[in-house]
Image (cartoon, rainbow, N blue to C red; front, side):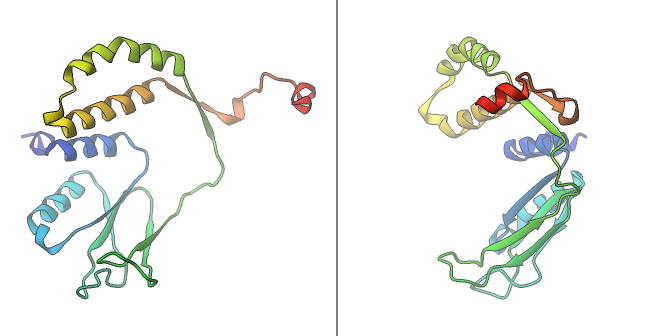
Length: 174
């Protein structure tokens, strides 16, 4: 049985995001009353091979429990609690995400003309689906569609092979 098929709509999209991301970090709070959901979340994180992280100090102001957690793929996360003032019922967390390289190696180019041209064709489809009774579902589908279309209209290129079209002399005049 395919475990992806058993996931709820939101978890299915998160699973797709995890599978397509080279590195990813998810930070969240898990409350005691969410015990069943938190068990499902732990099983899902295990299914997606996500590493769990938690701060060393309690994050709940009501009890001495840790309720804030993080999951990541391929990147270590160091978490600590912020001891300053807050209006929340738990302490804010500060997460330090280390990366292997600080140098930018790839650039991207988004083809906005193709993006807007394609949107002009699918606009009638989305206008028909727009319904105030199920606004959350349609909004989620629409934003997912936009992000996937944006990814499809984006090209990536190595910066070491990038060549600027304007000469140094002309750039100095700009």
